[in-house]
Each structure stands twice: as C-alpha cells, then as structure tokens.
Image (cartoon, rainbow, N blue to C red; front, side, top):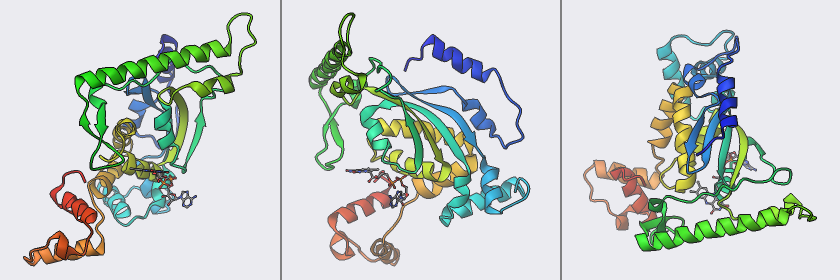
Length: 305
Ligand SMILES: Cc1cc2nc3c(=O)[nH]c(=O)nc-3n(C[C@H](O)[C@H](O)[C@H](O)COP(=O)(O)OP(=O)(O)OC[C@H]3O[C@@H](n4cnc5c(N)ncnc54)[C@H](O)[C@@H]3O)c2cc1C
C-alpha cells in the first residue's frame, strides 16, 4: 500500500489539529482516526469519523438522560445481554465512516451489504490510477474440489508464475489502452466514462462507507468468516481490529456470541442431547443430510466450519 507524500501530509495535518468536543469519544478509536491501515498490495481502510462508544450503547438501551453508565461492569453485562438476545437497536446508535481503497471485484461483494451509505470515486469524472491487485503467490490456489465457491490446493510455483505473468501483462495492456483511448495531445479522446470499460476487475477503486455498528457487525460476521473470500476477509479482519479498539465490550460480546458461537437446528440440538445421554449418533440416524452432518461435526470439532 502506498500513500503519496501529499496524502500522508494531509493525514498528519488532520491528526495534529485536535478539536474540543462534548460528545462521547473512544480513546481506542481516537488512535485510529485518519490513519490508513494497509490491506492487500495497494488497498487500505481509514477511519474518517465515528459516533458513540460502549457507553452510548448502554445509554440508548436504558433511554437514559445522562451517560447511561451505572458501572463499567454493569455496562459490559448489559452489552452481553443485548447481544445474546438479539436486541440490536442500541448497537445502531454507534456509527463509523470509513475510507476504503479496494479492488473492484472485492467492491462488488462489499456493495451487497445494502444497509450502509456509500460514495464511490467517480471514474466518469476522474482518471483511475494504474493500480491493480496482484495476489501474493501463496494466495494463488486451484478451484476447491469440496467447495464450489472457494479455493483449494496452492498452485505449483510454475503455475503461479504463469498466472502472475498473465495478471500483470493483462492489467498493464488494458491500462495502456485506457490511457490511449482517453486521448493524447491533438486527439479527440474517448470520454472517461466509456474508456474505463476495458479495465479488469482487479483495478482499485475507493469509497467512503458509513454504517451503524449493528450492520457493521453483520458485515463482519459474514466477511471475517473463514468461508469468506480471502480478499474481502483481510479487509474485514482489519476492521475487526478497529472495532475491538472502538467499542471493546461490544466487540468482545460479538466475538463470543457471533464469531465464536454457532446456531444449531432443532435436529442438531436433538443429536447433542442424544450424545449427552451416551447414544451412538451418526449421520444415518441423525435425521440430517450429509452436508448438514459435516457442518455439525465441524462445529462440534471446532474446525472452522
Ligand atoms: C459466503 C457468501 C457467499 C455469497 N454468495 C453469493 C452469490 O453466490 N450470489 C449472490 O448474489 N450473493 C451472494 N452473497 C451475498 C449475500 O447473499 C448477501 O447479499 C450479502 O451477504 C449481504 O447480506 P445482507 O443482505 O444480510 O446485508 P444487508 O444488505 O446489509 O442487509 C442487512 C439485513 O437487512 C435486511 N434487508 C436489507 N435490505 C433488505 C431488503 N431489500 N429486503 C428485505 N430485507 C432487507 C435483511 O434482514 C438483511 O439481512 C454471498 C455472501 C456470502 C457471505
């Protein structure tokens, strides 16, 4: 990830001019404000603004006149109770605004999360930078044989080299043509909104993304999950670290009940009860399909399924 000296100077200037406020602030989040956290080869996540902290969640839950805090211990207990019982609206009282730079194919997955506000860099108005996501060789893997939606065995060095050569060559050739179409001295030049259509999906785009904590945690539950595509998961992981610093109690409860927890169907629960009684339970007598049983075993054996 590379920021230009001008961009870095703008961030430094913002961080060196603090403003006074009566609003709740989170010391952990203040540390993150404006700084760019590198993700992938040219991407980043930056906190631009935020509202609320752990006590704001409790304040809303208690519909309180003051800060809402009875004691730190009470606050943590209340937040765990809210998370456990899916009482989600108090979490919507906290918001965060992020600046994200990400490859277009990652942005396509990300934008499916409709409960956020987005403003994307305009490639009609501006010329896109010559920046493409080129994976690290170890991120290159063959199609998974067990999961139609994932990758499996790592590519051999020879195959990885060939793939990387194609990715680099195609990106550079497409960008050269993009520049040529936009026009050189003395040419009419194609409009930017049309010239961009030959650019591959690994080119980087940028957006501001504002979301409340409830919907952010939903995003993280899906995208920081082991089954999410690596290229979006690394962004979700970076945001998880930010959220852990911003609202430590809420993040701890989320990690416990959502990321680390599991939902069991009534058939699965029935199997657990039978197992506890010492019964020999297997897929055939479980009432579950092979796929369900495999996932159920994954949950019990904690193998990330
Ligand atoms: C592993 C994985 C694989 C996926 N594969 C595919 C795929 O193959 N093809 C594909 O198209 N998508 C795929 N998706 C995207 C997925 O179907 C969702 O669109 C995406 O995860 C956003 O989730 P969401 O709708 O819950 O989030 P949000 O849009 O943020 O919505 C949050 C919640 O708000 C409510 N909500 C929001 N808008 C509406 C609405 N209009 N109507 C009713 N309720 C609403 C719902 O309760 C929803 O859960 C995949 C996602 C994951 C994580």
